Length: 80
Image (cartoon, rainbow, N blue to C red; front, side, top):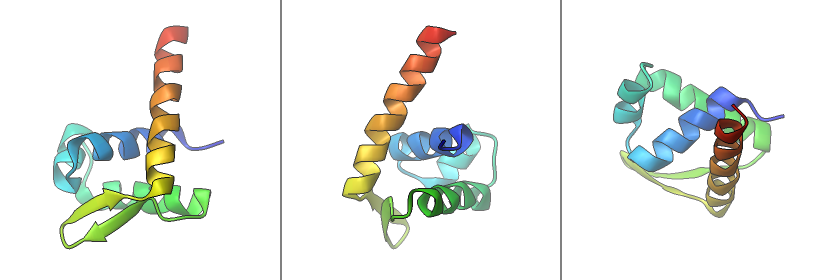
């Protein structure tokens, strides 16, 4: 099972597009966001982001995971 907190961090990062702003929104540190993404990448066994300087793009695997994570978040909200 994928860690739900790491997925939330990943989805927020994908939507916000910036590590520091993601950290601020989630009340985390920027290194904490990076750590969540690295742990998630290790868990799924592939890169989710292509880092380009201070920006990034989602890889194909990242796009697939983003779609999956958004669906799971919606399902959990409906369940609750």
